Length: 332
Image (cartoon, rainbow, N blue to C red; front, top):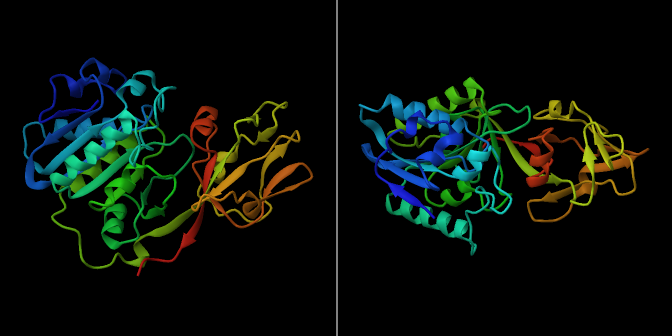
């Protein structure tokens, strides 16, 4: 299901993400030669409703239309059919940012093939560009606690998040080949997110090598994702429906990247069915460690810092309510 090209198809750069299907008939990997042969791998539209990566990529490619790229670039344009519908992924599809590990589906085989292709091309670094639906700062994520990864991440942001769950993400697969990051560029459609992603790709393309020295502890804030918070399928939730099992505040997005003290209220319990789950990196259910119920409300039990809280109910069902993080000391 993978198209592999060595050129930019005619008319591609004039199209917004929702119209890419007019030129591309499926996921497409485009290789472009640059001055340094080892390529930067950039993946975009792994979620079809997150178009900042594509907007940044087409600005970059227009800029270098008649100029040599400073380094070779391999651009993977992912879920084109979901982008057509403005969806994270279609109902019968796998999530394209959960397919980068062993699996039997066509999507898993495609991801494994891409990793093999880029391994043979001696990939220099990997960048996976995303948006999110809640109020979050721009930040970078790494799956390996080593300084080349941190050097790449801090080219984008001083806020860096280390995580190993969920499994099957693109950056985790590529971290076995090269420094790899996922970058979160705020909500789709924001010009400063597009410009930030563009500047980051271009900065990475101009890297000659990764510095051998450590990144200064003063140059970054490091966090660790310790749990994924989910709402069970059988539990109804809402931000405005008084009959839902769980009623969350419309202001809950304001908690993102804030260190919340114990007894911070999260939700109103309106039935015996209301509950939330929290899953640790080891796959254990640990909701009782982080939350407690008092007088029909769910409160934090420990100091926590959420990320990815959103009011988008579809995204919550498809992915999660949020992630919980802890602050880490700098890498030595």
